[in-house]
Length: 422
Image (cartoon, rainbow, N blue to C red; front, side, top):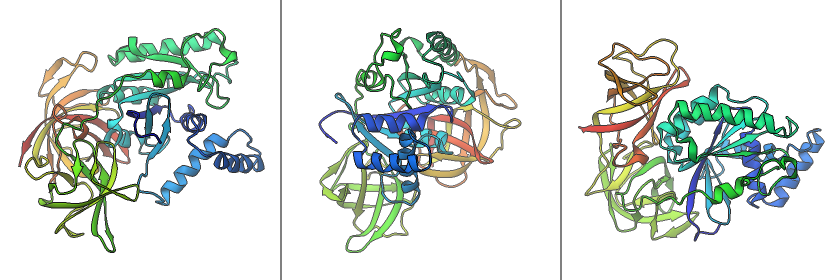
């Protein structure tokens, strides 16, 4: 992986059966990011099972299984290189917590590829993911109209789906003018890394070209350090090693840091990345590090590490803008679901519903409504039931968004407007 290219986090979103896994596998394969012998092995397995051609989906499934077994610290990351960028695909699609992960890890995605099947068009999850991408500030959307092979590469079918998606983007006020539409077949490889003869009627870029054309993202190195803790290990010879991904700022040896809400701190002794000691780590880096005087029981998953002189905020209450995606009835003041923010999961009470917003315009539609329901957007006041470190999304967007879960599903997504510190 060449480190001198700029880095982009890419979310791959869309309805569950529209071919996201196959597309990810195909991208990794076409960009040479999956070793040939791995592909061969999957091809043989696929043929044995009478499923020739499924090797890309296989690659993804097997990577997912390895992940389940906890083989590596960089759990959810697939990486691939293009001429312009090296990309990290944030989270593996099809995962049941995809929406949650898209918000808590991958709200950090800079751009997204939306996969829509040509034979099926816009489906319920297509709507949900587009709405989320818009709420969470994804900048550019590339739309892959997938499974073109299934509809015999029909231009009419492509145009029909393109129009459906454009209407959806207008509904959620996504700037549809910037969206790039590409007819693709992840399965056959059409328009992924080279122009396809099967779509002679299409004259736009292929997918890898479109990815190369994405605008460069400025890494948030100037922001204060914020590093949410994923796990805390004890490693012999080193001691306590918190592990996580630097979201903003820089982690360097010798710095004095503070963990919140646990409220402990100390000096960073070592920083390790890819099993090598490094003097510093930057946004996007997955690291393990050791802090003088910090024991295994002092800190936990969900803590955020920051500079001792500019520690992460801990909320007594916070105001947030919320989008309700699905709820069987209505949400009223007093509702206490689980909020997933970065690596923390904390039960929080919605103390007050301050304003209902018009989801199309963002204008205030009603002050202090009695309830909100699916499809509504609102400003709410939230009280965490135990200490939670969270930041206003206007100041540190990487730590300012969250998912709300209840009854085994993502109920809502949102971003923090202001934090009333404890």
